[in-house]
Image (cartoon, rainbow, N blue to C red; front, side, top):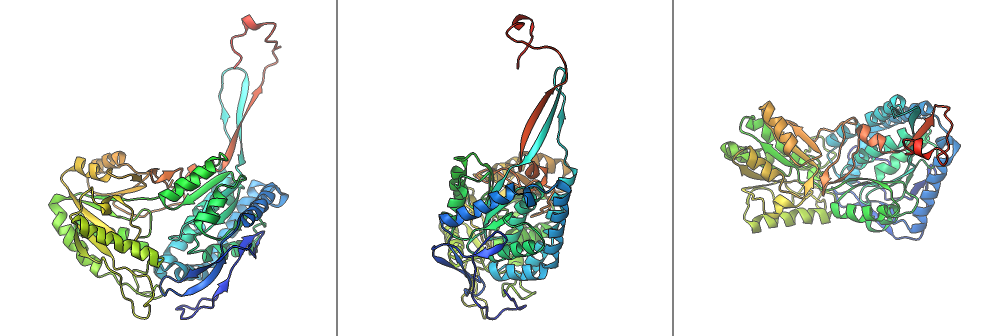
Length: 509
């Protein structure tokens, strides 16, 4: 797709699935429109894959996994290839970040900053592949016990619309570095950069079948992929209910699972922290990506002594955020992904009013000149929010945050942990001891102290409770892409006959 720097009109392209290193036609499923959320225009059409399409992709992946070109590649050659793929990604950054902005509406400054970090994920896991060692385990008696790790096989990956390439690459990098293969079902809203990356990697030398893509709706194509009998691991980033459905299906074939699901991040702000800095972090954490991130700073829990000052300054800061054309470098907030998502965010503004919260700003659709059919929402802040309100408990997934006062540390933790989710949390304090105490006590898989949204390929990422299971990134993710085999070798030459010398033998197992 040829994308001008500020696209006015785009030819509607027809895409197929990506299997065996190329785009291929799908079966007889319906065609789906892919829209630019900033304008509402259709920019591409994709198939809703059928069971036969899914099966074709899985057979291709299995053949690649067991074949010589990929399955027979030694570790050092694979690591060199993964590093070449990182170079190819970097060489195509300009195309990728503009295509991502076109497809999901994030301002170009955001997509450029996010995508420029992704080649490092491939380089990090290539390094892990080179440095990994199997274990020799001390055991009782004259035995040598060691482990062998073999790649787990086919990883089915269902990715969301909010960070199409970043969330894909968190999984894809480790899949390739460990010698696994993958079949990816991107969001039907945002498939374009996933397809483009597959083409780039194929041209850079990735063997056919290692990285396949099936397109379509989550409730059909995604469900069929998750329940396919030949998957060895399921990776899904999405809503909690989607995770329950897909996880239940994958459990039937005993597939390993990594689920990164919903979130309702609490941000605890203590009165020893600079209020202006806390406000700047609040705006960033709540509104980056139009708030469409599972670690969105959606619940600000603020110490009572600075509560009024924080509320006043956050209101003022939020009103300065520039909403507009995502391709304009001056734009700070783009649209949400769809009309449906816009309406969802606005429904939560209504819930806030109904439940008695105080609207500080936003809560309505935004008008952007020249983008009358875009899905824009004004950044929204509610104050005086109580923990039993829907806007405190439920994930909104838009540019929307709430503010709640607390009395002391125990009260802050009580409010923070009053949630079914447990993905991320943040703490704003200058008290080192308090920072570590609260980090240990808050219910979350990720905690940021005096920061937000920080991600690194070496740092494990994932949550607890309704936020999912498993971890992406780090050695935790790397290790979960292998089956571990224990090999026990008797190094003695003693004769053995259990049925002759039973009484004198101390143990059998």
